[in-house]
Amino acid sequence: MSGFLLLFGLIFMWIGGMVVYDYYTVVTSYETIPGKVKAFRMQQRRSRNSNSLMYYPIIEYVAYGNEKELKANSGASWPMYDIGESGGGLLFKKD
Image (cartoon, rainbow, N blue to C red; front, side):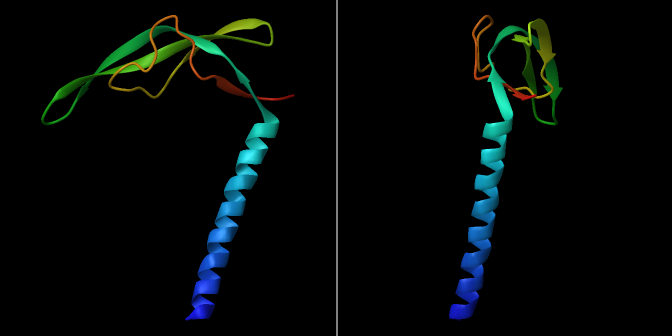
């Protein structure tokens, strides 16, 4: 029984090490660039029982001196940020 628990603990330790390693690589090889919500693309989502409106943000940001726009592929049933408000940030690979 104790051998099984030791193996189980080693597996969890290995998984935890991989999570920490992945976090460290993202932190050291990417930079965060702030952006702000320019507008929302709204789309009607239909299911059997109900209809709901999905909000897909359009984000404006400046990367490497160029102003760019990002249209999100994932949305939410309510906007997390207002138009003109700056949110978390976008991750870009460092050169």
